[in-house]
Image (cartoon, rainbow, N blue to C red; front, side, top):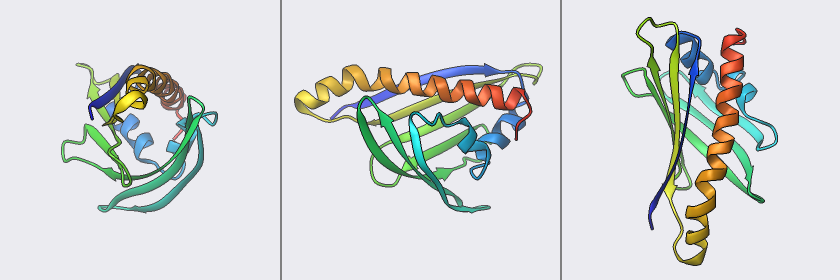
Length: 152
């Protein structure tokens, strides 16, 4: 198996804390930035302070559908949010970097997972990262619009 990675980034005209606040708002903010053509059955299972959130959703991409149950980790730096699927090797990491003046934030969204082997793995390595980058781009664009329009 090989580790597959899809990485996308977007500069958002807002302070890091404002972007982070929306990303960590799993009840309302997060559901607003997930494109409905890809994400369905979004549910917050747990959202207790200090314990990390537990969310679930169904992702539709490339004619396939897969369920995820995601545990959220917040590293101490405050600049990263790590979301791990409890049922697979899938990990999504949001990295936030403020600009020098602090009025803009670079958001990097990276997803990684252990790819399949064989002929299925061959096609997965070719098509899955590309499809996921397209979805990530849509998510980041929706995040940018929500934050810049003041929707929190």
